[in-house]
Length: 366
Image (cartoon, rainbow, N blue to C red):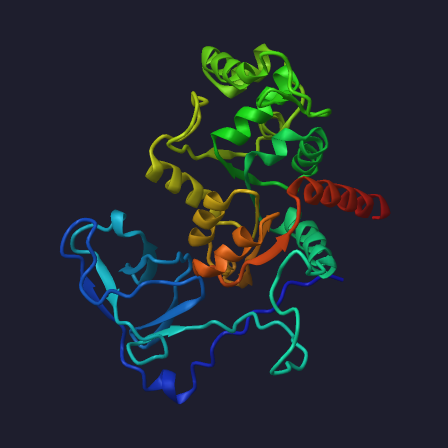
């Protein structure tokens, strides 16, 4: 039987907590500017001593600042700071400044560790069977009791089986939000409209005559209809990832890039508007799965803490997976501070098809 790992809060009766000074907050000197010696937040639970009580930042984000607002700790981006807001200052994390970073709240059980041992990194040679088993359990749990956010590159749209598998996952309730770019939506809609992705047949992968026009034809047609929803309805689209999102009311955020064609009508051209929209979906995420998109993955990793505080006050773990055929992309997250991310090095089309088949088999077995 699957159970979420229990969160163990710090023991605030210990001497270092009792004797710790109060956390210090100083006013922001101008809009978008933090005071000197500001404290930068991390992915881990962090507590601040305020009025003799240790307050947890309910929502956190790496590389942001903590603001004291009506007795609560609010974590805010620098660009959103307002002059006069009271910002946490102090660079220590072990009570010296009334700040405590709690990195071990979800400690996993580990066997004895040898000083020297092989295969400690995660690479194409790693066996991922235990990761898949955990992922099946997490997805089945969070389908009913959490929020599952998928971050997707365009690779899925190039293959019929991968598109069908992702559509099944959406319609079966395993997807609560999708974060992607213009390319994923464009090539998926191209596949539904013209049966190609970047001009190649999505089943045979054979390039079609004049196929290099197909994605532009698709974008132009969507823009003519004014929205993706209108395009799907008027062109009688009945398959694909975006179709399933629209059908099931699953929100999708399309963050634009400087190289986009078109783009499709809902694509955010303002990078900070896209960041805000992505973060709005990630605020309540309990499981995040990033697949074949390094830049969106790193952006998501920077916005996703290792924990979530539920409405009843329970602190639970956020499960974060990065799936890519490139070891570099998988390991890049750790280099950028997302130390709790679990990497799986594999072809993402194969990954999502295996996931769909396994979850479907689990449902048939009950």
